[in-house]
Length: 285
Image 1 (cartoon, rainbow, N blue to C red):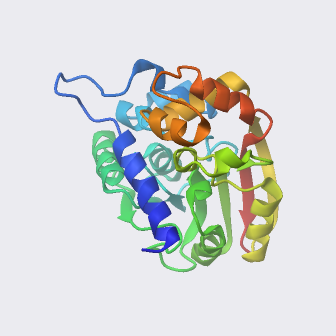
Image 2: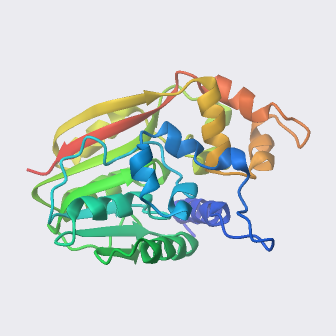
């Protein structure tokens, strides 16, 4: 198995375990502190969240609202990279209306199953979820008006391939607007942590490298439209809510142990000013 395949398998396994499913007692498996932490930081409105199935909101693992400030119109086709439990593909489907189409692509069976449940609960029939990887999208060339993504591209071990795929599937004049994590000057122990890779931190690249990758793929008008800078408390909640139950994995390479309660806090404090969410726009000529 290649290094890239191993990374993808680790990411998929981690998110499969993180998906909330009903417990034997009938309640959700996630602890209350985890519910909605990320979506509250990410810029979704209460009206947007209230219109969605609860499970789509609880199982959101994003870092921004990629549909905020977008100009998506009725009848357009939107592609969501790493659609997860479906929060953004559901919102996109509402924006494009019955004459449009929203397509989600995800590689994790458990996420796809959860998205299908949420789509069924929504009653919308203009949504399709396809299994695949974002480095080789199961989508025709020149077929979508918009590409969106929420805190997913940073997880790819082959980001240039993702950028090339975005350029391939967009129609001429098509646009992308993604929310993603970018970083700078990460400590070495953070870079080596697979748990923090899965948590959207150690696999992220710096902002200029991200933008240049899109330009190299042939996209134009590349720009950052919004940044969300996290303080220590927000970073602590972000790490904990992204992948609950990874304390042991974090401790293995970040100097913690089972009894080290302040571990997430110490990691978060080391990342202040080095990790933020960027809303990135680009256009296909």
